[in-house]
Amino acid sequence: MFPVLLKVGPITLDTYYVFWMLALSLAMLWSVRRFGLYGVDDDEARRVIGWAFFAMLLGARAFEYIWNFRAYYDHPSLILDLRRGGLSEVGAFTGAFLAAFILCRRNPKLPFQRLCDVVAPPAVLTMALGRWGCFFNGCCTGIPTTSCFAVHFPYDPVSVMRHPTQIYYSVASALILLTLLFVERRLFRSGARRSQGALLAPLGLILYSLMRFSVDIFRAEGLSKGIGFSHWVLLAALPLEILWLFFSLRSERAARLRMGEGRASA
Image (cartoon, rainbow, N blue to C red):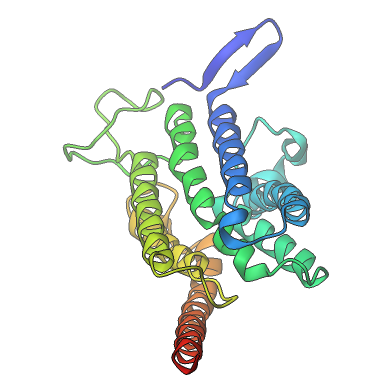
């Protein structure tokens, strides 16, 4: 493992944060390039994404505190030590989602659901790349195994091999990304989107929830130790995501039918 990418004097570049910051930066750049595809106002969307990015970092760190509450309660000084602990994906999604929702509600020029579809593929790209930072850092590891995918981590005895759950997350996220891009291409093949509802965002969230519960079975700090705070959040959100996707699909179908009737009457 390579937890430290570069160290020059007192300056240390942690591989974990380098990968995640690189992934987030690429996601933001890709999101900006996708504004035109969904007819989103460029200036307004940039402002919302900027605030959502800040809220995402706060949410990611806040869920980390909740997940490891006992450790931070016993050692309060660790709260301000950003090099200790990590970032929670579920917390990042929650923070960014709430910030974007509130800001879009206050700005009628920016449809929230369209913006969600803009950032859905870039968000999944963030997970696919960022999880390699977890792998090189040696965190988020899996339970011991003798499978052909087993990896040895430096802090374990030589005889202990573990599931590389970080790579499982990355590969699964890449598959989700390909799925979203395939669906998006099919949607736009027959012309521009007709409704204001989101399709990629709820679909991506549903697939993400299924992926987390599937992979966390093999994670050392995952479901093997019981359902944690993040899992409860995912479980509570899953029915809402399914309803969101259902009503968005119905709205899109109705909009296309109205468009077809309008052309026929013309």
